[in-house]
Image (cartoon, rainbow, N blue to C red; front, side, top):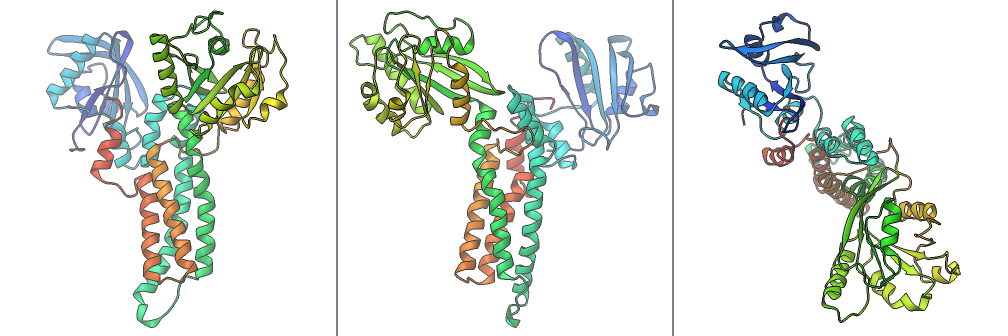
Length: 454
């Protein structure tokens, strides 16, 4: 892949809009735009300035535009960058892009602007990946987590860990150079203390992925229970709209109904399902099968019970089956407006329990608080580091396992060469997160998932 040529792409979404932004990056960007922008000599203008005028060539006026001028290294890619804000006509955008392609510009690949920024040292790989997360964020918590990573908070923590580890790894390596003289430069107790200190930092990062992944991708929340328990009424109450048909007739919901709901800045993917019961109705039976399939994919289960018709013994067997899935489950005691249950009896089933009236909105605030607690999102911090990227999680997990092997090696007094090997692995795994260690296949995989123009 050639990173010396000048690239071009539409940086705004395809389609008709008020304006479109065309981005060029490379050493020919300013010169080529200057050739078709007669209003000013851009080569003589100060960087980080805007310039109004026309794009014209060969007697043809392409559009009236605003030119944003950035000169490297003080630009996104650390190269010369021009952004052309033109009218949002797809025809105009395509014509301007074609004009510069004819001059020699190459159409940018997906994520190539950000990849150039990474390769030119504007930020590390973890921050580059955060760019895509910021673009894709669809809730307050997801945006906050992505921005924290983009600003380098995550990278700074990893850099500090890696720097401390490098110090001791270098001492171990030094010992190997003087192996015949039986000298010890790295105090084993100090190394053990350091590894324990690093594990105290790595383990919380690994553990944070469960919540971080939920924040990034949304929490799959499946509403289940017997027919006529009030599942659809609960869905409507949470969404504050009549999304699902509600009826006193048992079995009204025959298929799954999905929608999104944001609570505390977290996106929940709510799934209302067909009631669980034995039935001879072929269509309803298919709905029950789909409910069972959804339950297995859930990140949290809301088991709704009609307390006016049921007691704890009625659902004990069903809950026992749910418990085998090892998925967080909340027991939602519905219709308390008709019958006030003895909460302690239901809590005896061993699940977090809340009493509500979905029909009248009673207890919904308590339900929402309990839901956040059960999925571990009630203390999401706007400033704390949280792992949201699966690749980062896997590398941190490998780092943790390798550091634990170092501890075991120290406890049984293994030789320095074996300890050094484990330390190298730990450094390698940490380095792969930030891009201190990378390869073309890894970069292609990461940046290939970006949108064109970014």
